[in-house]
Amino acid sequence: MKTLRQVKIGETVKVVKLHGEGAVKRRIMDMGITRGVALSVRKVAPLGDPVEVTVRGYELSIRKADADMIEVE
Image 1 (cartoon, rainbow, N blue to C red):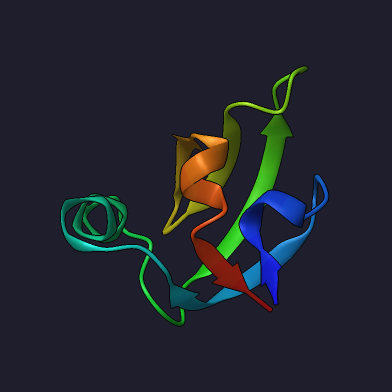
Image 2: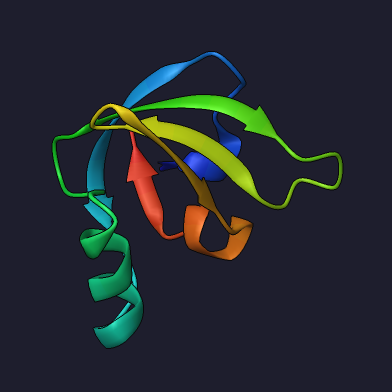
């Protein structure tokens, strides 16, 4: 299982599954990250938090704890 946190800068991946429960999962889905959508990692902050991704044509910053909940391929 590969998570969004493990993706290298410049790599494009597809979301396979969202882990997590309730409000956390709902918040991730409200940001446009749903199963089957393509994500491209643009930048990672020096300490690894947050991760900046491009999803559905816009830039989004995600905490590394949330990035661990997003399974990709």
